Amino acid sequence: MRHLCQPLGWWRAAGLLVLLLAVIPTPPLKRKVESIAVAESAQLAAQNDSDSHAAEQAVAGVEYVGSRKCRACHLREYKSWQESQHAKTVELLAPGARRSAKQLVGIDPDHDYRADPFCLPCHTVGYGQAGGFRDAATTPELAGVGCEACHGAGSAYGADAVMGLKNREHSFAEVIGQGLIYPVPEPVCSRCHGSASPFNRDVDPKYTLNYSRETLAAATHEHPALRHDHGSLPPGVFFQGPQR
Ligand code: HEC
Ligand code: HEC
Ligand code: HEC
Ligand code: HEC
Image (cartoon, rainbow, N blue to C red; front, side, top):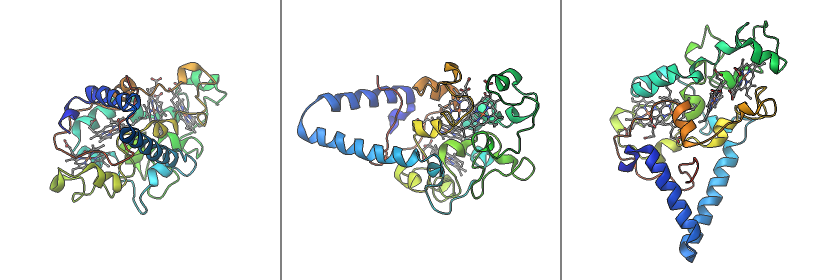
């Protein structure tokens, strides 16, 4: 996986490969494409089960550990995420924050929504789930759209023996099997960036989620190259983003 050293180039290369596989009509390749497509739609369907938040609870018994736990080994991602809007989404629920946006969608700008069970699932990590955000006093490390809102609850894959320093060359299959969401497919984003949000594209087209390599790079965090070889992604799991 050395080509992950240039994630953007990798995406383009992956897109090109998929395109090539799709246009070359030799039977073995075609069969491969079909089986990938089936596996992919199963994966997406599972992740699209937004009501049960299935994507975040894929492995039984896993719990949220908080973004600080990831910081120890992923300092660059952590620091850039901390500067991003996703890290500060609880502040939007405070009285007076983004007054005109709230008025636009008919939300009372003077009300304090920081304990509101309707708002919190999209503005924190794992609200309403075992081990998820409860309130700012007891679970401050789960405030905001933290690492695990996109990558899944980390108690199993984040363990030292699985992803950590004792196992730097873990396979993608191993950590994904322990609940890591990687790469992060569009349904993970659209669980929040969708019609269930008061701020959706029917209210104003500016709230349309543009899931593209550019958005992923700009909206999430810095993407330093992976340094170790993690093998190939398991069947049915592959880089998304636009294929061009
Ligand atoms: C289904 C998920 C979801 C729910 C529920 C939700 N939000 Fe959000 N909220 C979002 C997303 C996603 C955005 C970012 C939209 C964008 O900028 O494209 C957002 C943005 C906002 C913004 C900033 C809007 C702007 O234009 O500056 C405020 C303020 C906000 N939410 C408050 C709330 C409040 C208050 C509630 C509860 C009454 C709530 N949200 C419920 C997902 C949600
Ligand atoms: C809003 C969603 C989102 C959040 C929040 C998020 N990530 Fe990511 N992460 C991504 C995406 C997208 C990628 C690029 C790969 C892909 O397509 O999924 C990625 C990739 C990574 C990678 C692989 C190397 C790299 O940087 O590309 C690491 C490590 C990582 N994230 C760690 C973290 C950590 C640690 C946090 C919290 C501090 C975090 N992520 C928060 C979406 C997110
Ligand atoms: C748990 C809910 C949640 C998830 C998952 C999530 N987001 Fe967000 N996102 C938000 C909220 C809430 C905001 C509002 C931040 C603000 O306005 O300050 C936001 C803001 C953004 C913005 C900035 C919007 C603007 O107007 O500048 C972009 C871009 C974005 N998200 C893209 C993504 C992408 C891409 C993914 C998936 C890789 C993702 N988000 C996953 C909740 C989420
Ligand atoms: C004890 C160290 C450690 C902790 C804690 C840790 N990671 Fe990692 N993580 C690693 C290592 C090592 C890699 C492989 C890095 C490389 O190849 O450059 C990795 C890789 C990743 C990747 C890329 C996919 C992969 O497996 O190569 C993602 C995404 C990721 N980590 C997310 C997280 C998140 C989210 C957390 C917090 C819940 C976290 N990590 C906690 C050590 C850790």
